[in-house]
Length: 118
Image (cartoon, helix red, strand yellow):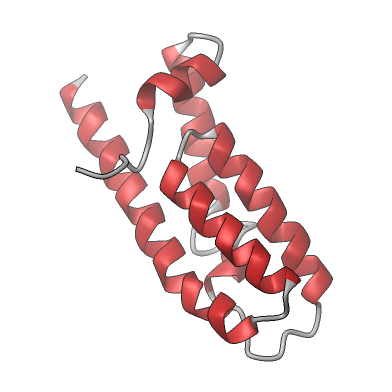
């Protein structure tokens, strides 16, 4: 089995050992990755973006947020997206958007399952 969408133990460590704080951080990160959240522009990078710098800054922020939420696959996708933007590989960057959305949805499902069990 591959890497989990969310590393619950790491998320709790990041939150100072507090499950309640962990859950607030995870929820906050997911809100930012929502379809109308702050990071939503990363889901649909145009072939010729008008503000590459803003997208690079947004992708850099996304990496840190995914790391803070202990979401390794999301973090990796954000890092790939950031590299594509930095190297002006916009078509490849655009292709990462749907994978970002899919991984975000996997994290949401993992959160829902965990909350049902606890």
